[in-house]
Image 1 (tube, rainbow, N blue to C red):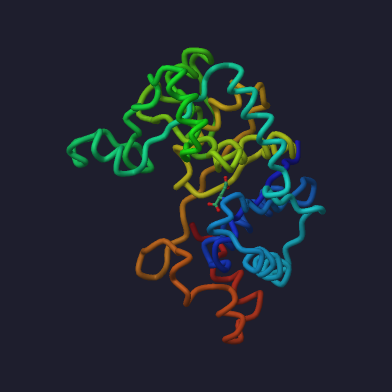
Image 2: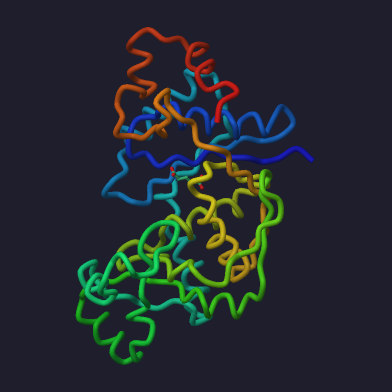
Length: 279
Ligand code: GLU
């Protein structure tokens, strides 16, 4: 069966060679019989800009990629994420967390000894056991909060879970070390984890391709699929494209944006040659 794949950048900067590698990977995996989608992951309005979204669409088209229309902009679908969040709230698997970063630091004590997950310090669970009336009181008082998934409770509900990665085969979801991830904030009804999981299901994506820096995030997505009764796609986490110094491309490294390469006279063919067969 041909696959439905997608490239899902966050418009927080100009497209760089690492993005092009990832986009081309997804594009080619859809092949001529499949479908390739582009999704703009612009939930974080403090970091995302329309001008970056427009620029990356323009760069991808200039490179010769094409995708189905309309492009899904996550910022236009907040209602869908809110509904999913309500489903999780109904299952009593979400709790409000009022901790600031300094509260968390104080709670964990020695930061170097505190448990870390793949994306940094694990939340110590301070607000998980707040009595309901106390959470309600704080919520009503207007203080900012995040909504966290009670991962242990979620895993107990879902039972053992696994997913399939194209390079590593069957991967089991670990029962600890994930931490209670943030799924939403007071004013934003979703986070990366919830939005990406829901959208891949709503858009019928059958093969999720992305960089291996997001490998561990897939455990969280698999848990959400189980809780929300969503289909489970195949995954392929590809190696990250490295620059000649062996460092991963990053948005802060302006020299390698497609914009700057275009301005310096590079053709689409030149740029595609830079990512061809890499990773
Ligand atoms: N929006 C994410 C990023 O730009 C990628 C999401 C994904 O491919 O799952 O890092």
